[in-house]
Image (tube, one colour):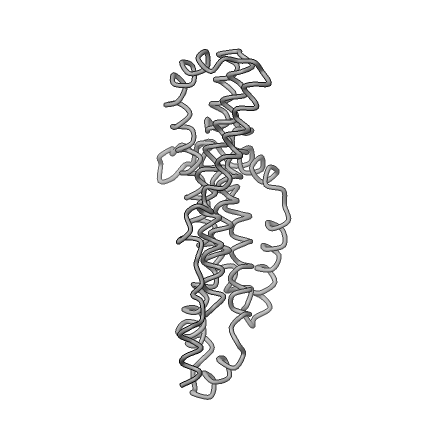
Length: 270
């Protein structure tokens, strides 16, 4: 009875999703940076509104391409990473060592080097069944970002599996489960929620990494901002448009980061 009374009086934990004010704390700082930038340059905002509005559709289309690249890269990287992660845990050395080599190479390789590699090594078109299919640069960027994503997903899977208590493996073996049955029916379902927070954090990093696509000729948000800056040729506009680029990435990635922290705290109690 006393235990039930103590539990009932225990304060309930308030998660960040129930305190929306915490999500908005960085926004005043971002607005302050914009104002200070305008004041430092002495550029009246009225001279910047018209070109900003004129270039807004192009900037939106460029940012949409960044999001598309990030979604395809994390999707392809997740599929490849799960396969590599399972092979990395295999008891067969012939399967385990190539998986470990894949993880070590692509997890430690600079992303920009991988983007240059996939852009200039892969052909500009593919010859399949007598037809030539274009292989545009933005798809090559997807492959270039999927390579390090797959290595990180494989490590995320390994960490999630290793966090499962060994007693569950032993109990399943005592019930005559095979290794495949244990992995498929007992371990993997528990790994999903353990993998979700770091996977979402990886997606936010991949999204920010798509800004490198402009260096290999992809017409994304950053490339559009550079073209707009050179076209308008005003210092105030250049500062404003790059602040806008930063604000777009921030507005997209910050909620992902906050939700990741929420999931980490929630699943830490289970």
